[in-house]
Image (cartoon, rainbow, N blue to C red; front, side, top):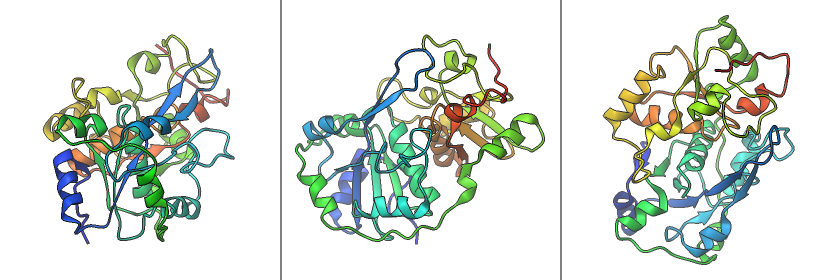
Length: 298
């Protein structure tokens, strides 16, 4: 059965789906903030639950990507849990096999696309990103809700989500090593800003500065309208992605610092062309932690 909504959904389309009540729908607010500290000191993440309590899309639950949807025992933040653990976490939010999920965040869409990617990695295609998040919802003239009632309501009716893992959407370290060395086909796409790509950022949270050798740079912010925070039209996305080489690579893999920003170009490629792009979950946090692995700067 085809998803009830497209992968990128407008505020108007979401409001219409909520009003129609013909779709089993769960809306998630995944807003999270990252804080950078000293040189080579890992960044920290703060789920923006207080912000959610002040204002959110009506009916939305709040999901803590850092804890609920990550393996907190892993060395890197945001590491993908086992399929069974992740399916149980989504089930606790009322998401079952027939549920259509619409996810958003209010800090640039990367957290929303991360949740989109996690669900698709689990084999759940009924998932959309709200274009522009809460700001776009309010700009469309729709009221926001406040308080914890919507979150409590979603969690009051757990559901069963069956994991049907898609391993091709999760790039492994050995796979990335082979692509980087040229011993396997593929294209490594760094989704961070150009200064970080070159190793010239003001403060680096990674053990070493630089990028994985052989990478190209497609910064996530170049795929969004700077005025509205919404994704560029599909034809413009195709142009940006193609000019960056992402659509020409045989087996593209996106990465960033910890697997969050990397999901934005992966999502954009899917929206624009239907391409399935793998994400390297460990990204620079894992790659730069081993000094035997090379990095390029400049």
